[in-house]
Picture 1 (tube, rainbow, N blue to C red):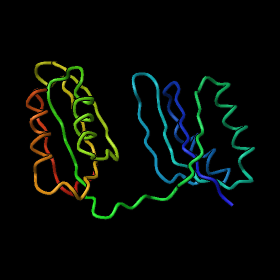
Picture 2 (picture 1 turned 135 degrees about the vertical axis):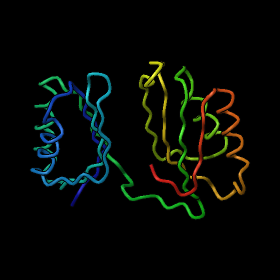
Picture 3 (picture 1 turned 60 degrees about the vertical axis):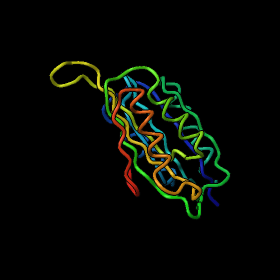
Picture 4 (picture 1 turned 120 degrees about the vertical axis):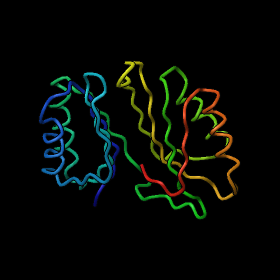
Length: 178
């Protein structure tokens, strides 16, 4: 029998950390179903959906405790429904956002999508200095699922209006993946 968990690990970035963690999971018979990994500031964050044999849970907990004792923060959350939820008639879109960085960009977009009943499946954002000006430039890509009730481009027009208010460019592509 197997169990499925969301496992998060954060701690100081160092070469070999991803290999160490994935080897540990593999040695316990675990399979990483989905993952996101990134350096954020000087810290490295790993987020994985992990399936592992039930008889390996005690050993995994011991391994994770060893990481905690070395200064890493670890959480393990059981997943009751590990399968992918199918939403009949919902359509995937890719949203790209670019512009000068300022507070509230993500919140404004997320609030609008929520009000429209649109589900954010994934989102990644970054801020980096502009090549010529050095002004911080914001970029974000998101994959969203739009319910069948939204026909036409009305919700997209509303999103573009949010972009105009926030002085960022927003592009929407149907079926796009992030």
